[in-house]
Amino acid sequence: MLEVLTGTGLAASAGLNAYIPLLTLGLLARYTDLIDLPSGWTWLGNGWVVAILALLLAVEMVADKVPVVDHVNDVVQTVVRPTAGGLAFGAGSSSETVTVTDPGSFFSSHQWVPVVTGVLLAFGVHLLKSAARPVVNATTAGFGAPVASTAEDATSVVVSLVAIILPVLVLAFLLGLVAFVYWFLRRRSERRREREAARAAGFRA
Image (tube, rainbow, N blue to C red; front, side, top):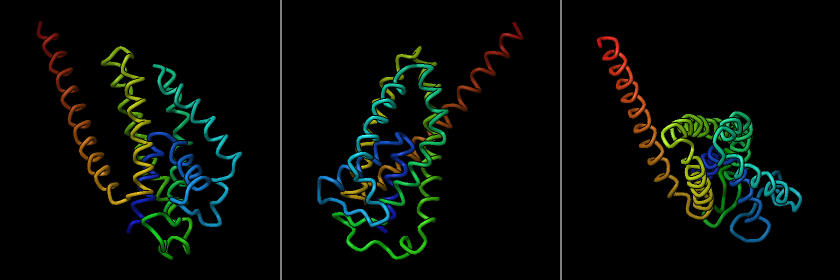
């Protein structure tokens, strides 16, 4: 169960920022004893891979904070984030961590399952992020983009670390995500009704 939560947290984190969970896995595996990557995933701790991920993260963090550019970035990331989510779930759910000392054989014998699961989870979070960002930009004249992006990056870092160190807390993040989805959909519905009411009032006038 804990390895599932670890993979889920990392995949959800990738939906916000593709490179943070992968870089977290690589750095912790390379420089600490908090996680021991299985043989098929040790490349994440390679120095060149870590450096490339750090460079890609820097580019992503800049692009995601500029209005209009952030939308283009989200389009590009539609492929990148789910892919990263699949890799993060696959690596994280089959690793030994400070809380998971014996990853389940289900994941080691069906390696495609966690990868596909991670792709779907990251894709879902990415779609939510992509839908929310235009609303933030429109309601704040673009000034909210860097604030929202910084909050997403910080959340991605925290969730990635929590998924590895204390995966049970991932449940709290998932509950918060469900609550946000409910609020967001309800708010969009209310705004749509307000626009329709204003349009109808304009026609009557």
